[in-house]
Every structure is written in C-alpha cells, then in structure tokens.
Length: 120
Image (cartoon, rainbow, N blue to C red):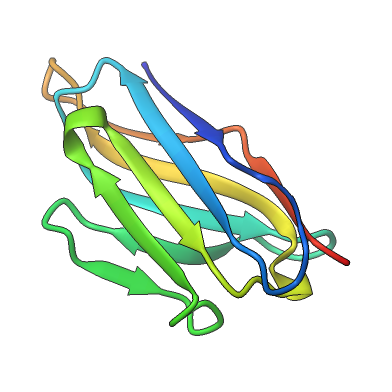
C-alpha cells in the first residue's frame, strides 16, 4: 500500500503565500505522475496542477502564473507553491500520485486533504 500525507495548509490573507507538501510512503518502486487537486464547498473536485516523472507540468488556467508545482524524487515528495492567493482559492487540497510497486503492480493513491482558506 502507498500512503500520501499532505501538510502546509492553513489560513492566509488575500495576496499571501502558502506551500503545500505531499510525501508518499509504502510499497513504492517508482512514481509516475503527481498532482494537486482541490474541492471547494458545493463544487466538484478539480485539477490544480500535475507534474510528470520527467518534470513536465500542467496547470489549471485559474492558477497559471501564481502556483508552481515541483517534486523531489529522492524524497518521494511533491510541492505546491501558491502565491498571490485569492479567496476563490479556498478549498480542501488533495494530493494524488500513481506508480508501480515492488511487485510491478500499478498503484494510485490520494491524500487525506489539507484545508486552505484565503480570507481577510
């Protein structure tokens, strides 16, 4: 089994910054794509950003130029640097990753979520 544990959420004023982290642990041989999603109250979960194993990235239009996704393969960790935060960024942020375990079986996991609240 693979576990994803997020950290770094909290309350921040509009225009502020936060950095989210997500560490993967367990039966991991390799990690493919890693990403961040978010879900605001009453809305569907939506993609925020993804990063492939080769480092290529993809962002939702709403966060382009403000958020940066990165990964540390040695630590099995993905980060989301969020700058110029807006009230509409308020949501529970979830980490997602997939890969293969030591039995060559594919896996996919979600983190438990971390709350980000942008408010004055």
